[in-house]
Image (tube, rainbow, N blue to C red; front, side, top):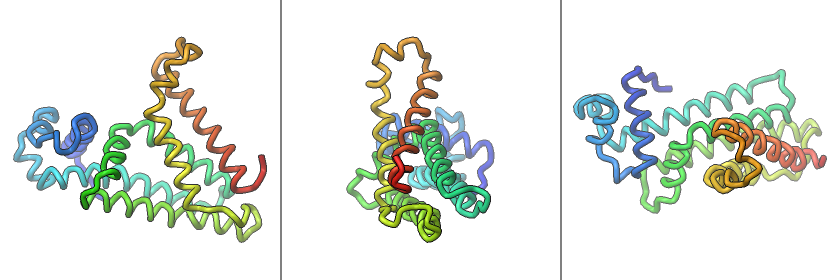
Amino acid sequence: MEDYNDKQLSIITVAERLFAEKGFHGTSVRDIAQEADVNIAMISYYFGSKDKLLEAVFRLRMNASRAFINELVQNDTMAPLEKIYSLIDRFINKMLNEQNFQCIMSREQLNKEQSPIRDLIWQLKAEMLGLMRPIVTNAQDAGIFATDVDVEMLMTTLFGTIHQTIPAQHLLRANTAYAHMNDQEFKEYLRLRLSNHLKKLFKAILTHEF
């Protein structure tokens, strides 16, 4: 895992926000330098190019997820369903708190041009699937989870549901039932609603218990 100093992290954070707001091609290194209050030469020194800076954004976010899943898989004290629930909450929190990154990630996945970033995305997804699979298969072998579980579709359901809910939150927010909530209260409500829904769904799929 890369170790970034405070100045590098500041540049990465600014770049992430600008890439989300203006798109990768709509953001210049000069824009990033001005927002981060550094000179262009410093960005070149630390990252080499705008492409490499975008890669740094992805690697920073991906490494945190990789470390969490590895630790979860190796945990011998948690029941399999607890691990799945922990995974659900982890990614709900991650995706709600990193909406700039999710915007970039969604855009890059739709990019038809071959790019190192798109390769990184699919590399991470394949890796997460490979790490998650033993949680399910070990529980299947122990007779805890049903044998007909489609792990690939399970992961797609997890990320797809969260991905679709984030942009739809403005529509949900328009409901008068939530008018009394401030932004932080609504975000917490949405987090709990997503968590409860996905946990019920995954429990039903994995154990055939409704």
